[in-house]
Image 1: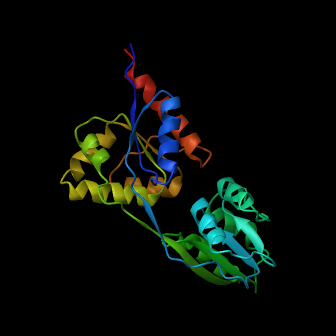
Image 2: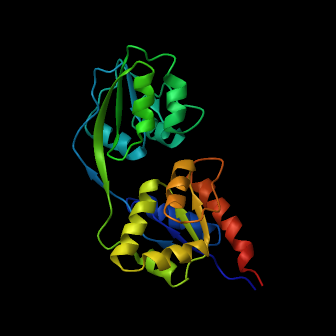
Image 3: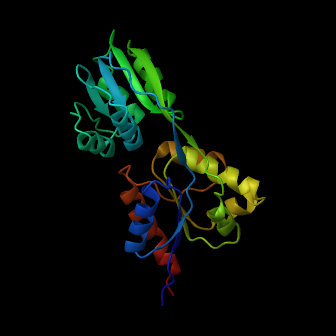
Length: 248
């Protein structure tokens, strides 16, 4: 007799949260959706005079397209395949996707070519300095446009209370900010320490090394970091890791 794995997921409630919950359900888990990120557009658009333009998320691509961004004359770079797919869906040509889907991977892919070039980085207000600092170190003239801000939604935190009561078997963090917002929500509800203890009795998955470092810095033990930085890989790995623990 098996018990279903209750897995908390924190993606933005813009379609990604419901898609994530549907995926977890298809894997045999019981999703506990609790959006920890909400998108606030700034109404800015990427500059159109850059030699290279970097997009780092599907959300950023959609906002750039909504602003009628003209990509003519720039080398369009996507941080990973999901961003590249969003660019293609919006009828942009993708010129570069790094082998490693990360800020460091983009720096590695571009550093030999950008000395003296104008590089536009269009992303959220929580982008990694690894990208901008690395490109500047390579000799690029870097300009950053904040396309949107990421905030914690009002009412977030039901999953923190579930964790504090020991009611979660798994949790899936997809960015450092989801970790931080989860803990802020737990603090606001007065259950921070109990929530961390509850997570440490569950299987915690993080989508990449930076998110893992953030979680561990706050005392959260991380059990799973998939080789591929995608939600599907994260969900599959976490459910596979958690499920054997709940079989009699």
